Image (tube, rainbow, N blue to C red):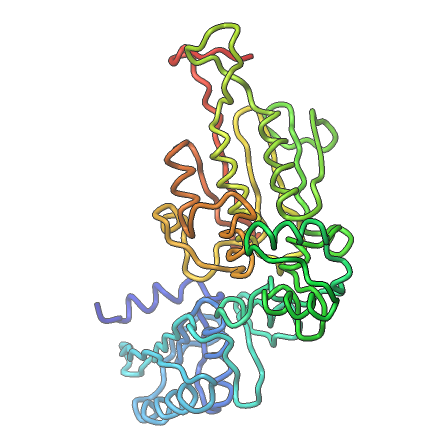
Length: 396
């Protein structure tokens, strides 16, 4: 439906925010371009020209519409890199003045620069320059031009776990461990585990370093078993931190969860060992998903919380790009760490195919909720514990 005055007033009634910007008039195409770039680098939004900062729709004279449309065209097509395709809509007010609504889509080719090479981001109703490596890396990561597992570390190839890497080469590639350091470095570079500068990248450290925790201590898994159903500051039943190569972290975190699950008889003999209340494969899938798809640009550990009524696996980083909880439930995925994914697919961790882990976990245990927290940059899998007397189950 075309936007009319009533619809316009309803849209601007809430004031400016990260998706709405007001301008009483526009006379500078460069300033307009920076606003467009900020919207495109964020989640998109609408610029209302002819609306004052305090949300009053005063409009612009009809005689100025052509001039402003020319500024919009120049800004979007010539002063933003890459050029943007924007949509404009003219809303006629009761007094004959016009408000121009300029809709800027969320960019698909981030990051976007203004003519001076400045990258802008929307922060609430304002915009600001990108001024840190972390923010710039995140923008490149969103546009699939950069991946965190490619990051160089300070670890030389001497930090490699030689025995573990030797066994991996033998079992996966049927290849011997290189005899010289030069051959080893060349092999690691060809395997996308070391940089041209001769150091291990993040993927190489996480998978094959002897003590990854000495190099990247923030990428551990912290697990706690709480009494009851709430987080306590000091009261807990079991707690442990897991570090080391990715496979060890996975095995230890999985074992922690399994030892804190109830065992149920479920129709088995009284003297037979009980079965875990939730299939172990459910946590295999969720832990692999957390370790492989977390955002390694966020310097924080994965956290595992075991409560009486649920188990939470909390990963740093919300779902990337246009992924939603509903999409991942259907098997749609987005590769955030392609090097890790490629090696996990070679058997480094239990892995059954890209995008299928969440579907498989739900098939085995449908009582799982997913929370995608964009503001907190977290993704949480909440596994409900449902030992039920209706199945004749008894707790050990």
